[in-house]
Image 1 (spheres, rainbow, N blue to C red):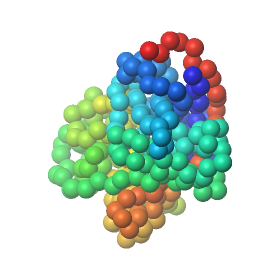
Image 2 (image 1 turned 180 degrees about the vertical axis):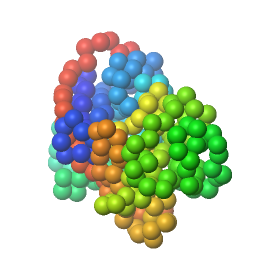
Image 3 (image 1 turned 60 degrees about the vertical axis):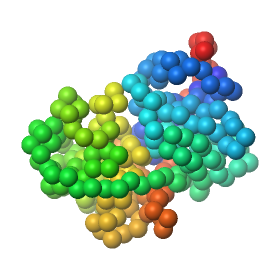
Amino acid sequence: MKQYIVDAFTSRPFSGNPAAVCVMDAWPSDESMMKLAMENNLSETAFLVKEPSGYRLRWFTPGTEVELCGHATLAAAFVMLNFHETDEMEICFHTLSGTLTVRRIGKRYEMDFPTYELKEIPVTDEMEQAFGIRPSQAVLGLDLLCVFENEKQVKEMNPNQELLKNLPGRIQNATAKGCNIDCVSRSFCPKLSVAEDPVCGSAHCQIADYWSQVTHKKVIHAYQASKRGGYLHCALLSNGRIAISGEAALVAISEIVADLT
C-alpha cells in the first residue's frame, strides 16, 4: 500500500499542515487504520478506496476518526490528481460530511465544503482560563470560535490543553482580524489528541464564514499562525457552501509493509 506525505496549504515542504494519504484497493479494519494513524502521529491520516462514482475518503487523527478534515482532503486531492488520476482536473470524494469535490485551479486545489450555523454564545471565565486571554466574543458551530482583540494575542497565546477539553466544540479556534490579511487564527484540538493543528481547513468553514459576515466580504484571505504556518483562500458561495483552496507540496512516498487487516 502506498502512503504519501503531503504538506497542505503551502508551496514549500516542511511548512503548512502535513497529512498522510493512504491509497488502498480495499478497506482494512477501523482498528488497523487507527493504529497506522497513531504510528504516523500526524494531525490526520487520510484513507482512500476507489468506488464506481469516485473515491471513499476517511480521516483519522491519532485519537479518533473525524467527520471532516480540510488539509487531508487537499492532500488527498493533490495525490490523486498528480499520481493516479493525472488526466483529470477534478475529483469527487464521498465522506462522512457528504460528497466533497476538489478542483485543480493552477497551483491551488479548491475544495467545496459545507458551512455551519453559527450561534453566538456567552464568553465565560472558563474560556479565559483555557486560552489565557479573555475573548471578546464566542461563536459555536461544529467547533468553538473565540474572537480576540488583535492578532498579537492570537499568535502569542499558550492555551491550557486540559482546560480546552472542557470547552464546547470539537476544535477550539482563536481568531482575530489580521493586519495584512482578513484574519489570523490558531486551532487547538486536544479532544482529538492533537494539541494544535498547524493549518485547519475544516475550521475555516466557520472562521471564514464569521469574518465574511463581519467584513461583508465574500472572499476571505486567512493565515493560520501556527509554528509551521499556512495560507487559505476562502470564498463564500451563493449556495451556502464555501470554497477553500490552497497549494500543496509532496514530502515523501513510502510503502506500508505492515499487515493491515
